[in-house]
Amino acid sequence: MLKIVLHDRIIRADEFINVNSEASYNEQQVCWAIVVFIFATWDEEIRPRLARIRGVEPNTIMINEMGDLRTLRRAIIHNGGVVTASEYAKLKVMTDLCQPDAKLTFNHDQMHTLFVHVTRSIRATYYGTHRSPSRRARPGLHCRSGNLQPSVMWSKS
Image (cartoon, rainbow, N blue to C red; front, top):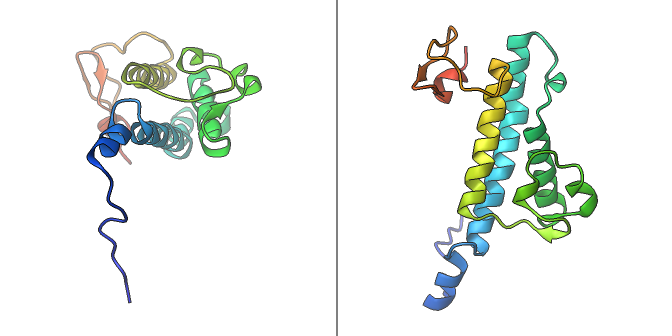
């Protein structure tokens, strides 16, 4: 028989507010999940597609920002969110998002910075430059005001 639990505990309102406030436990869990998800999407979907476009093996496509994201993901999954000093020394771009031997805690601005790093690096890899793409899109891409529309760019063929 399947047992469904709608809630598993009752907490006081002040505790609920504390664990759900900005930079609190729940927000950090969501931020960590986003980092893990972005890297998984890169490694399992986007990177192989870029490799197919370029006619190379996926592991030959290396982006500093995504390597940094891999390091952050590893800290989250295997080290309780702590980036060790040796792992921190390997970061090439995202050093401003964390401190060595400290737990990863992301605020809104840092998550925005992470998204910008990821978006620009993938765009630069696709177009071969860190500049925005021209108004003329490559075949199969759709650009509006210089912004790629990822749902079209990464659609399955």
